Amino acid sequence: MSFPKLMVPALIAVATSAASAADNNLQVHGFASQGYLATTDNNLYGRTAGGGTFEFNELAVNVTATPVERVRIGVQILAYDLGKYGNDKPQIDWAFGEYQVPTGNADWDLSLVAGRFKTGNALYNDYRDLDMTRTSVFLPSAVYSATLRDVYLAANGGQVNTTIRTNGLGSFDLSGYVGTQNIDSNEGPISDLFKNLGINKINSISGRRADGGYLNWNPPVDGLRVKGSLLHASNLLMEGENSYITGQVVPFPGSPVVGKSVTLPVRVNMTNYQAFTAGAEYQRGNWTLASEYSNTYYRGEVEAAAPSAANPFVVNTTQSVIYARELGWYGSVNYQLADLPAPFNRMQLFAAANWLHDEEDHDELTGYHRGLVAAVRYDIAEHFLVKVEYQRNRGLMLVQSHDNPNGMEEYWNQFALKTTYDF
Amino acid sequence: MKCPMIRLTLLSLFAVAGTLQAEDAIVLNPASTVPAISEDQFKDLFLGKRLAWDDGSKVVVVLVKDGPANDILMKRLGKTPQQFQTGWKKLVFTGKGAMPEQVDSEDALVAFVAKTPGAIGFVDKAKAKDPVKAIAAP
Image 1: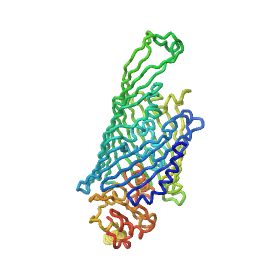
Image 2: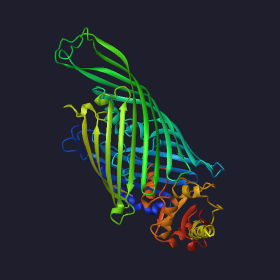
Image 3: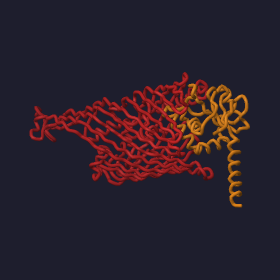
Image 4: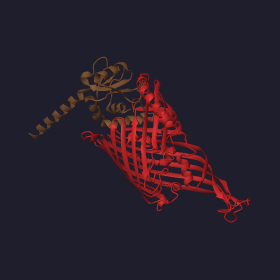
């Protein structure tokens, strides 16, 4: 029996017991979503062109408690499927203990967190899998790339959070953390990025140190918040293999056999990954406006064994450095039709413009992405929604070449449908 | 004559606003030692940004599912009910908070606050009677 089939009765069971558990400071919540994703011309996250895919869902359950004063503990198990990513494999989304440090000052909160926790990167990264918290199906693609979800999703380690309330400047939320990341070595999105570099097989991904933090400012203007966040990851080490066919592409040294497949090692050390994001959200009445800018830089050292071009019977180990800087921006508007009579008051409309490009290769098709998004959400009930989204895209920066062996198109469309239930 | 008229109109508006503010109240568990709550603290508490009282006890927010007190609370927070719910779900599903308790009536809210340490609710002032501790909404 698959994990989702096992999880559904389990979720119902815990939901039933949630009410009685609440008396003991224990809460149980969860959500389940199912979607459909289709694209024209280019495959995205697997096979989405020519019929689309229903491999698009999330399932989660969490338990939190306050066992003693000032201490909160909790865990959330999440399984997701996004085309070739996730495959409903259960994983710990977050699991941590938090201690509220007594400050003796009502305008200053301080807490310490240990475990696996959300990092608070950018305005919405923490809510990436929480379909019920937004109108759109996907977060804006220029800043929230699905292929980098493992990098931004959470960290394992320690975190310090503080809130300072002032008289004239509003309040400030500051957070900093040190830790590591969970990177799926097999079929995960990061593994996929390495494959897109031309590496045939990924054997392992290790290291992945990550530090970062954010400053969130709530100025004395109702509904406005301004946020800047930083992430620094280092020494993510990938070890893999490239395949060659002897005597066809190149002969293999010492082997007279023609047509034999051989593999040679390749190693990439991502020594530096830095991401800076700055943005603002303004919520007034039924309107929510948001805009964010991201600046991402990475540098990696590649060590690859390959047959020599001069003498194909000799294998050379070459070393090279790869690096890139990517710049992203989006602007979005959300409107809730709350003032209309039922059932229209349960609808929300969303539109966004995305712009992402590589600093150096922005003229190449694979060096930029532009997307215009329109989405509609309808809340069937307080905990049950359905939404539909259309995105018109230009550029191939978010498309993987190995998903599209027959070529890619510059202009393409993306269509998504999703429903979510939470409790 | 214009100035006195304008003054009179403004005074009337302030009087109406004062009356509206006087109609609702914050209720706390009777053991609470909190003397008053500022507007910023009010928003932080009801939006889940403050998890513990100064004495370390857990903040337990309790709401009436529907009704005029709930409508007034949303207006004071500057949120639609859906925005309010979404804010709490963001906290709950990232491990940063626990869902507010929900009850069917203001009488049930008062009863819940009376028996729950650290509880806070928002009701019509007429309902804010013993045994709960009532303080003016900011």
